[in-house]
Image 1 (cartoon, rainbow, N blue to C red):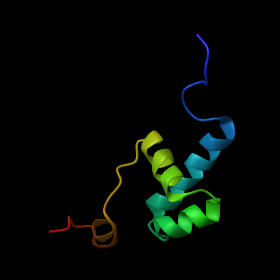
Image 2: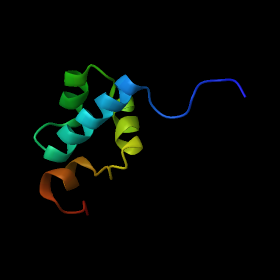
Image 3: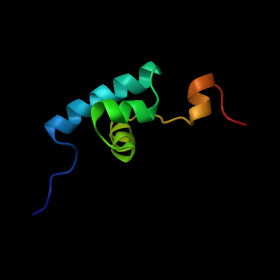
Image 4: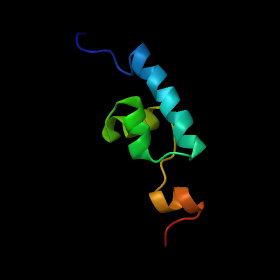
Length: 68
C-alpha cells in the first residue's frame, strides 16, 4: 500500500552505524555524540535501538556496573 518505507534511509543508516561505533567506544557521552552527528538525542537513541544496541544508564556505562 502507500506511505513511507519502514527502516532508515541510506544516509540515516550510515549515521546510525557511526553513532553505534561512537557509543560502543564509550569515549563520548550521548550529548557529545548527538552534537557531533548533528542529530537530536531522541534520534540518536532511535538509531541505537535500530542497530540493536543495549542502552545503559549513564552510571552503568561509566562504571560497568548496574546502578543500585
